[in-house]
Amino acid sequence: MNKGLEKFYELVEAFESLPTIGKKSALRLAYHIVMNDNYCGIKIAHSIENALKNITKCVRCGSMSEHEICEVCLDESRDNTKLCIVQSAKDIFVIEDSRQFDGKYFVIDELDQEVLDSLHKFINDNEVENILFAITPSIANDAFILFIEDKLKNHNIKFTKIAQGVPTGVSLENVDILSLSKAIQSKVEI
Image: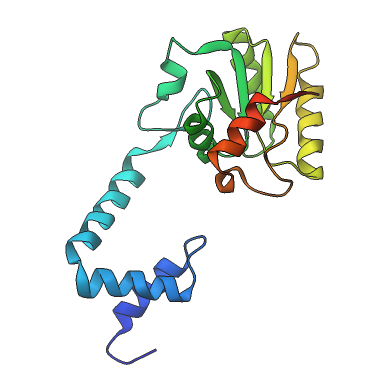
């Protein structure tokens, strides 16, 4: 580390701690903000502060929201009988961009009794008839699907999962919209 540039290298390290940002990208970003566009840096810092203060989990579905209940849960035009289960709230953005799903969502980012109780309540409150698992295909996630399906066996629900178009081991955020659209249209019964 160069003497006299400790603050600059702290900024580089901060950028480098973000997913998918390597040393070279972090250096370019830090240099741009410090030397070329101070306003951009201030705007980013302000946006981060606002997001951290105002974004929380929806109490119903676990998605991101600036309110206690997210916009999707409040949207009366959505089909309450359809539920899409995802493992990350960011996957909802990808699915919404595909415009292939008109139901509600439920995020299961960790399996514990509280989440399972919330899922049961969500299913009962919305009279869910169809569940679509939109999770990255893998052996571990197949076990995850079977576990959830078993926990919901007392409900009269048709289970499906996204099909072709999403390669095994690839996160939904890295799948193009066309492939995701095809996967949702071609969902398969479990």
